[in-house]
Amino acid sequence: MTSSPPPPPRATRAGIAEAVLEVLSERGADALSVRNVAAAAGVSVGAVQHHFPTRAALVTGAMDAVTAGFRARLSTALTDVDSAPRRLEVFCAELAALGDAGRRDAVVWTAFASRAGTDPDVREIHRREWALTEAGLQALLAAAYPDAGIDADDAGLVLAVLDGIAVARGAEGDERMSPDRGRRLIDATLAHFATRRGGRPAVTPPVEGAGLTDEGRLG
Image (cartoon, rainbow, N blue to C red; front, side, top):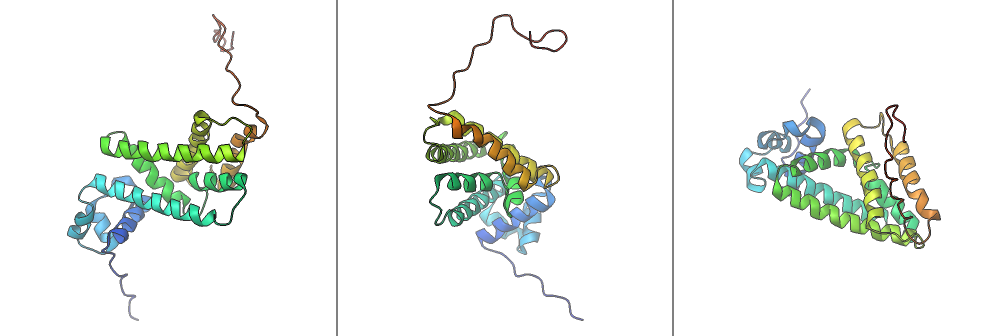
């Protein structure tokens, strides 16, 4: 019996970026190295370094690939979808990593966000991409709920929920945060926009002297 031939090498930037995604999603951020990526791609260390000379460049390249994949899937999913609420639903499901490619994307995004905490260049990319995402989400919310007075904080709230679901799915898989549970949480977050009119209710300032009592109750 002859053994199966090895898979062809992936020497292009796109092919190596795909190998980065495989290493990150299957073995974790600690295993991300030029050498491991080279082995996964079936190319030399030099070929990887030609496109991604540092570990930070590997993480950024993986994030670029995830972002491109997200946009491509979103564009396909939104084809011929005219309903504003349905467009919002599709966007939320993709961003919360509920789809087939979601968990791998969530693992990569978590690694990228972690790197942003210590790397100013990665932090700027993270900030810019998230700002664009929040603005896009605000526009989708405003179209879906035209009477709700949607503002940036509304988009920030929904984005925080979607991000939390995605991180949970990346870290834990389906066990605690299944796609069905993720959708229920998204629906619950969006539900109050359907009945809200004219913007967010004013926040009542705290009563002077109010706080937790020794028994842990509000007093």
